[in-house]
Image (cartoon, rainbow, N blue to C red; front, side, top):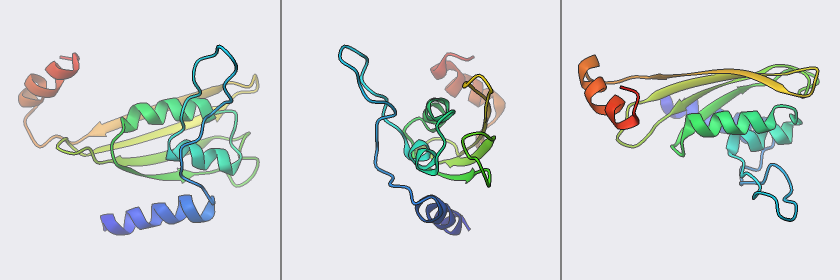
Length: 143
């Protein structure tokens, strides 16, 4: 089932959105400015679909959730005016040697040109709560 899921995702991103999944800068760099932020595959796909208002926030949130790990994603794009309507995504993140994570995020452009978002991540641990608290929470500084 997982193999089918990844295939479906690849077809959605590469086929329906015609996304070139190579990294591309979000903005052109001006002299003396910070280096341009490199987009991830999700941001590249939404930019090519015409989403601009929320592109920077989508890139920031998804980079945080993915954390450089292998992932698959499903984008829920609005049928019209993609830059003016809410969009959502669901991800499965498969870090090597770490628990499986499911993440989702919803982005909504505001009338002032900004973008609101909400996101969540669910991590499945194969251990007891005490072991998670002693291990991961201590390493990440959350326990």
